[in-house]
Image 1 (cartoon, rainbow, N blue to C red):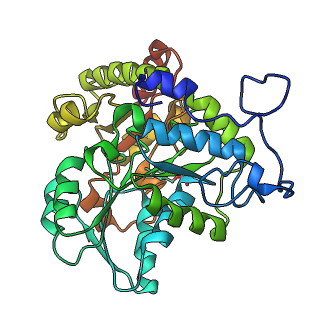
Image 2: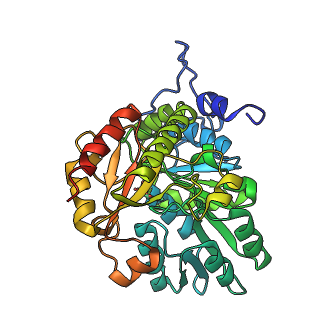
Image 3: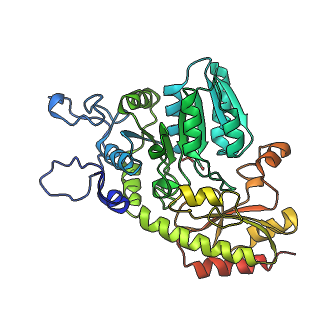
Length: 390
Ligand SMILES: Cc1ncc(COP(=O)(O)O)c(C=O)c1O
């Protein structure tokens, strides 16, 4: 499905395997661990790798959503995994060899950084750069084998210059992996800018309802993806069929939800910019953001996350965090419910103060995932919480 819009691809893309005689419009949930192996040659071969045999290897419900993700990201193939971290692990297991060098900026998702640092024990050299395009570009040189970046960073929402980074990486023969979780395929398609692999935490916007944990690896090259499929098989990191169903269902409204997330996030950012108790607002499509020009060039949707610093330090931020009523203090983002996170005490709590400073995570920073409630109610809640700031 190449010549239709993103919305049509989100609703109707993928494949359908039903051969039943009841005319199901929706792909059934194939909740089965194994498949009848008589005459396997007559059955569907999802990735062209092996006939359906066992759901740790392949499953038709999972395959249906994988095809949809491949279409949404303009990839040759996709594999669904049990989480975003499982997607990163499976891909890295397929790619790394002792002696390889992996380059990664400090502002990637914390668990990604920990995982990649730990590859050191397999003889991989890990180079962690300071955040920002200049620092990444300056570090790409001979010897680099893999560059791992996020198209839109978290929580400060820096836009990484995928076309420039891909160009520099490919000049030295390095592979580029882009975590496109925050931008989503609606905001950006890194493979169209030459990246080699895209990974997603489907737990966030793709599923979109805070009710499923999953991930995807999407690759530009079908042959290379066979290695990823093989590693998923031996690691056992495949997505559950019911999760695949939920994520496929979520994807059908992705384009609509992202439009609304963006609209509401922009309104919240504008409100916060004017608030006397707010020191600084981070939203990539606001002119005060360091990535504003790149966001205009590369993003077709600015997403639903707004981060902000409250005047008065840690206590002031905690006053907002503890006093919201509609917004839920928690972790994660990208779902229907608005969620507020205090990075310094949650996602970045185990970091040293020096590393937090290097990454720009201040004690008074809050990250707000603007949900799909009425934006007036979200703003009203922020307003009453900000009134509690001493
Ligand atoms: C940008 C990003 N990538 C990957 C992950 C990992 O995804 P999961 O929690 O589904 O394993 C997360 C989780 O927060 C994330 O924010």
